[in-house]
Amino acid sequence: MLLLGIDIGTSSIKVSVVDAASQKVMASVQYPDEESPIIALKPGWAEQSPDTWWEHTQHAIQLCNKAVAYNSADIAAIGIAYQMHGLVLVDKEQNVLRNSIIWCDSRAVEIGDKAFDAIGQEQCLSHLLNSPGNFTASKLAWVKANEPEVYGKIDKAMLPGDFIAMRLTGEVTTSISALSEGVFFDFKTNSLSKDIINYYGFDEALFPEVREVFSPHGNLQPSVAQKLNLKPGIPVTYKAGDQPNNALSLNVLNPGEVAATAGTSGVIYGVTDQLGYDKQSRVNTFAHVNYTTQQQRLGVLLCINGVGSMYRWLKQTFGATESYLQMNAKATEAPAGSDGLSVLPFGNGAERMLNNKMVGAHFHNIDLNIHTQAHVIRSVQEGIAFSFRYGLDIMRENGMNPTVIRAGKNNLFLSDLFTESFVNITGVPVELYKNDGSVGAALGAGIGAQIFSSPAQAFEHMHAIQMVEPAGKQLEPAYQQWKALIEKQLTN
Image (cartoon, rainbow, N blue to C red):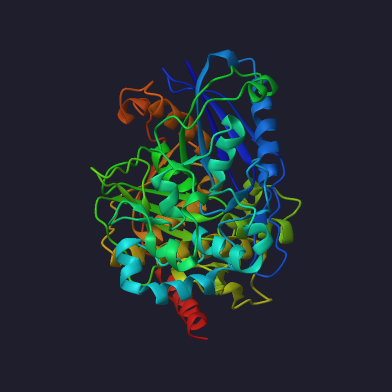
């Protein structure tokens, strides 16, 4: 029995097929080969085409099915992970009405800030666990205010994963986890937020039917099944945002467990059973994949927008002829602290942990007689690690004190230098696993389809491949210099 996992990333679509009994990955494909562009029509804007996601998803599944390692007729369930906070709008014929306003888009910050004050900061934080900020609800309000002709045609507003499930099944559903990441959900009433609905003037009919994350979300349509060489009727039994899904893929489900990613964005995600919040909404709390009204499991999420995107920019600008592995090796030629070169990697929109300010990316203290390409690459990796430390200290202020962090050995965690910098500056050991979001989505599908008797069974073959322990505080002076620079930027 096989499970199909789809991960709708910002850079690409990844698809994996996993054997349910052994949890072995039978095939895995990423499409396209080059990173997908982000459409920025104005500074601070960020959009992508949902129809392009769907085209790329189909290509990825077709390529995966060309592998000889499995029979696609044995696929029994489908799971979907997706980039969080994006807004997808469709009409009654399920046609896309405009590009998706994605997670790192900053156009709705002012709208969300006004809502925060108008509804009441304490009311928002105690009921929504977040400021409306530039989350999905505020993006929908921006469309309502600025594109009334589009808004008037909306039949359903949804998250990216809801859209891909709709294309597969023809059904439109969502979950509490998805609604909470959009800041549409009231945790005190366990329902759509009346405060958000009434303040923004939304019609509740715009929102899809709510189902549990691990549950049937429709069955594969015959026309789609034929095109993808899959059996018609396969159920979609799992949908989750990429960070809750990454936590699931690392078996991070219980209070006190913590996961991290360093992909396009950087995230630390810790699970709690407390309805807590940061008073400044610098870190955010959403319903985790296993949240129920009877057993609350919430994810406290620190997000740094400019992580993999900063490293990608560096490669395109300074190292276009080198691979990421070659860049990682080059970085080791410079000493810890990069001889004083400091990088603020915040060039990908408003940063929540910096109070939704658009600080921008900066290089500081360049010495033309000392600093080399190796220094530049290392300083970017260290600047990203310092950003994680800055955010983790905010999480610590809010009671999240991890003793170990689990991460997949991919993206920036493929760099030993970055991993060691992360561990040494945070002071927290990291367990590395061979995993990714599409595999997590496949295992989530198995849980949702009750192919596994429990989540624990889905991870019975998962073991850490590496443990990295802190080895000193040699980066602390460089971090304090970095911290002074960012705090100066925040006061300007």
